[in-house]
Amino acid sequence: MRDHTDPDQARNARLGADRATPPQKAQAFLLCVRHITQVEVQMAFVIAAPELVSAAAENVASIGTSLGAANAAVAASTTSVLSAGADDVSQAIAALLSSHGAQYQALSAQAAQFHQGFMQLLNSAGGAYAGREAANVSPLQTLESNVLGALNTPTQAIFGRPLIGDGANGTATSPNGGAGGFLYGNGGNGYSFASGGTQSGGTGGSAGLIGNGGNGGNGFLGGAGGAAGSGGWLAGSGGNGGAGGSVTGVGEIGGAGGAGGSAPLLGWGGNGGAGGDSTQGAGGAGGAGGTGATAGGDGGVGGEGSGRLFGLGGAGGAGGTGTTSGGVGGDGGAGGGLLFGLGGSGGAGGESGVIIGYAQSGAGGIGGYGGDIGGTGGDGGVAGVLVGAGVGGFGGMGGAGTTGGAGGVGGQGVTLTGLGVGGIGGVGGFGTATGGDGGAGGQGAALWGAGFGGDGAVGGNSFVGAGGNGGDGGNGGGLFNIGRGGDGGNGGNAGATGGNGGTPGTGGNGGTGGTGGILIGADGTNGS
Image (cartoon, rainbow, N blue to C red):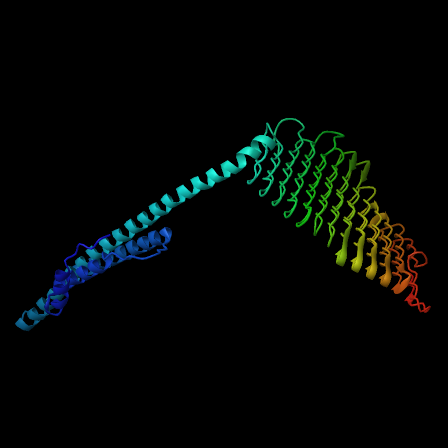
């Protein structure tokens, strides 16, 4: 904005300010401020945040309101000071004080006028900045839309998917998510049904070169969850599988969870969807975790089966395979009923493997609770490495029940050169009548290096009957290495009869010595 203030007027006001009355001083001050604020400042670049300018205007208005209220409250007492007596001196002092009060009120009025103008200036500046910002954004959006339209129109017409952009989410009429752009874009999510009959969830759309896969939609009324889309060929994680639909009818089975999406090169596999619950039947199985370039996705949890007479829990989904770490198997669903109940088995842990480095496979899922028989724990995943360390996954714990479920077997840890460690077996499930057997330890093997078998797990405790047997220790060793067999697990405690301890005879042999002919290795100890 151009300066239309008379410079001489402003200069004269400043020079005579020392001889002016308070109202005249205020007027001179206002002229100076106006002269400063209205000078056009030419700058190469200006950065302003409109929302901050608007907030400052609101703060200025609040300050002005507070000052105005304070001045009004003291106006009467400061402009009409009563005389302390009838003598001339007292009356002169009262008149002097009243005159000062009146001059202060006049100055306050001038300051309020300036305050009002300054607030209006801030408001108009904030509006101008916001308008200019909006005007700048619109052409950029139009340019972006035009460029993307020119790029995407041919591929959309030929292949039914854009070159750059996210895939469309599924709808009730078209439940599957659309694929992401060939170069860049996430897959659309599958549609989740919430009404109607049995409906499977829509599948998630896959990404192109870079992007994440879409999530699978949830099933409805026993329908299966939708499978998730895969991540980008170059980079991107897989989507999560949809949950299976729950049911309430007698003997009905909950929907299975959808599988998680895979990640081909850089990314994580998606988690499997949970199985649907069934209040009078069998729960649905959890979906498998997706394969990951680095980490596999976790398996989905099995659905709960809680029938009035019979109840079967759904099995947990298997963990996805990964290079550095496998996904954890999903836990089995609980099962219970008046006559019979069986907990779902835990899902197996995902495998893992690398050429050089460290690989940790996934743990097995926990077996579900069963009114009669607890679910079996999932086995640990296998880990394999050419050069480095491979550690097998732990076996999953057996589910509790009248008869406890057996623990899962520990995963194998295998390497060509380096360290191979077997996973620990899963603990046997608690049983009111019979405890579950502990899982055996995984084998630990290395051609060159060291191999250690995993320990067998403790057998499950029992309230009135026999405790579970302890798991056997895993073998450890190889051709040219040192090794140690895993310890056998202790038998479970029992109300009447204790379980047998696991023995290392089949699972706990020491590793064979190297080529020097000296055997280096130790057997694992027997469980008690």
